[in-house]
Structures are given as structure tokens and as C-alpha cells.
Image (cartoon, rainbow, N blue to C red; front, side):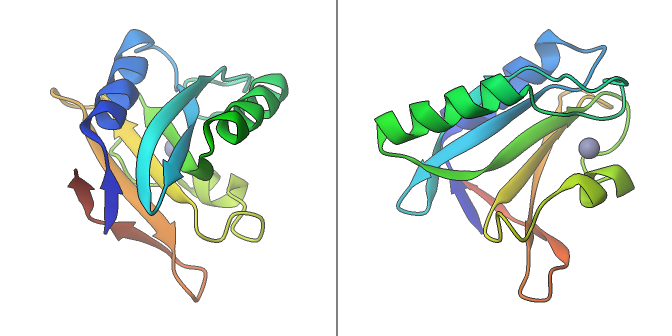
Length: 136
Ligand SMILES: [Zn+2]
């Protein structure tokens, strides 16, 4: 179960739908086990229709903003423009469970309307598993 504010779900959806021709990405900030903020980052992947890479400067700036806000880095989000909201092989290959073992990965799919969001986290055996989303 992942607890997240309605504002974060709305922000991820707004970001994804604002750029329907490419994947968008961002970082999630949280406190006390609840995700409360979504920070947009630029996607600098060379093939942004099907993958994402965080702009390194944005990633560092967001880290500073999280520190200033007293938030933890709780996870990441990105969009899929025409596939379902499940991790692709590339997503799994590019994730970093060693560095972020507890991170939540949100995926917002624009394949159908309205957009749908699912959340995933690595379990103790380092398998990516879906987590039910609780909006609080
Ligand atoms: Zn993906």
C-alpha cells in the first residue's frame, strides 16, 4: 500500500497529459510514509517516446528542494504514452533498487482515457511488485 495525496496524483496526470507525445518524468517527495509532492524533471532521453532519463541538473535541483522542504525522496514517476501502466523491460533495467531500495515507481498511462496510474515497489527479493494506491 502506498499513501499519496490527491494533489500528487493530479500533478502527475497533469504533467503526463501536458506532453502527450513523449514520456514525462519526475521525483516524488514524502514524509512519514505519505507521498506529498511531485517535482517535474525534464526528460533528456534520445528516444523520449518510449523511455526517460532525468535531466541531471533537474535531478540535483530537486534533491535540494526536497532537503529544503524537509521531505524524503520517496520515489519517481514517468508516463507511458501508448502502453499500459506497467514497468517496461527498459524501466526495470534502468531502475536502481540498490541505491533506492524503498522507492515507489508511479507510472501514468495515456493509452486510454482517463489516464491511469499504477505504483510499484521492489520487494525483499528485488522483484518489482504492484502496490495498491491509497489516496489520503
Ligand atoms: Zn516506462
